[in-house]
Image 1 (cartoon, rainbow, N blue to C red):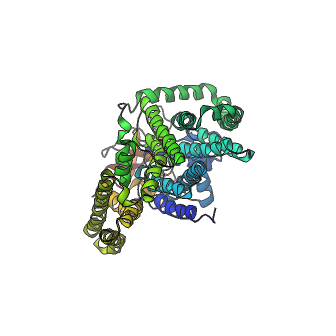
Image 2: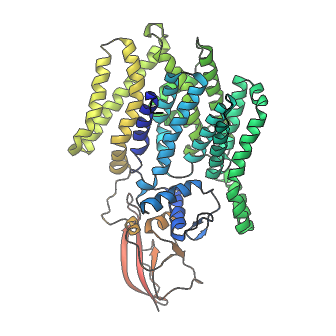
Image 3: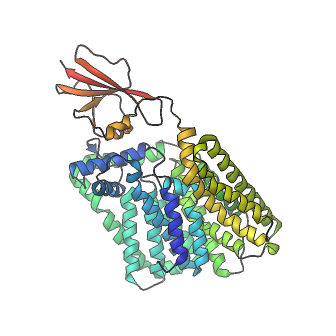
Length: 519
């Protein structure tokens, strides 16, 4: 691996892409669930039967939570979200490795493999979801790895490839059930069969059967254990999850056409890739483009048939589409400017204008919001002058620089602008109170009860919150968490003191913690 300079470069760029934003955003609902469950795994020393705020957690398989719990165990840190996002960032870097290896296996062209992986490592949606430690990235990362080694197995007699493919398949199923089986593996098998021949798949049917057996066998251990633990509850949760996919977050069929917007800097190249007919002199490149194109379209269609849609659920489309876009950009890199058509030349001019906007906008935003940190603008100034200088040089040099600077501009934005946008613009808070999240490192010694709390609050206070009802048996002293600023019930409680908090570090919403003595 370390002898492959292109791969080493990719790993370095990927590290910056995925690690530069893990400390910026606060945990959302899905991340909070993952973090709380991991915290309870470590506190309770119970790794198999997972819980959320003390209740069974059967909705999601536990592998992503196990990774988070391992980080908590190793570091002793249960509150710093950036540390708890390390597992997903590392797995995202692994995804870039898989993309490089898959395209390298199919094309025997290191340059094409580099370009496809470079696009993936600098695509906005991939760097965003790949730095959020929920469940969404894991199943598709492991499934792509599984498919990478399945391809290697189909083209080799080495049994280790089949074993690795099965292990990653099992990891995918243990991350979010069969979602990646449906959203990535099925369209892969169809596109691979159409492009390279279904005879290849048929002649390797026993390998594929063994691959499925290994993966499903490994993934079956946890659900079987949960059936033994509490069969009725487990089955009821599975039925509820099935209904959720057809009743919540229902969106129109073409919802994932916002794919082009979330490609970030690659938006114009991605539009050109999918809205134009392409033909290359190299027949193998034609096959790889066809394979990636069909795989992307089928992935889009299968995901679109599912009623429940969220932007991050389109994650596999961005992974797979890096292959056909990579073929197109590799063609551009290896084709003389004078041979390109008018459309292609216009495309590069438009893309260079986009880079000018990014450079000037980055400089302006830094001087506007963070003038005392003007040094952050230096990379954008370099980007601007590089573009200006390129226009006075050979057009082939301009073409190459525009392609590579498109990816590097995303890294620049991630490493210097994202936190400014998040903290100074999107989530500017005027309340000067401490946030509830400070309790994570200053836990209350007494139990906390509430009748109007959310899972986000459970993560923020750093301990379980007990539901408060008329039937709840209360201790002599305890805390009540409430959004009500005038909370009082003198018949039952005596309020010793009240603490006020901003509910979130980036929010003006207030929440109150009452120290109660039970009469």
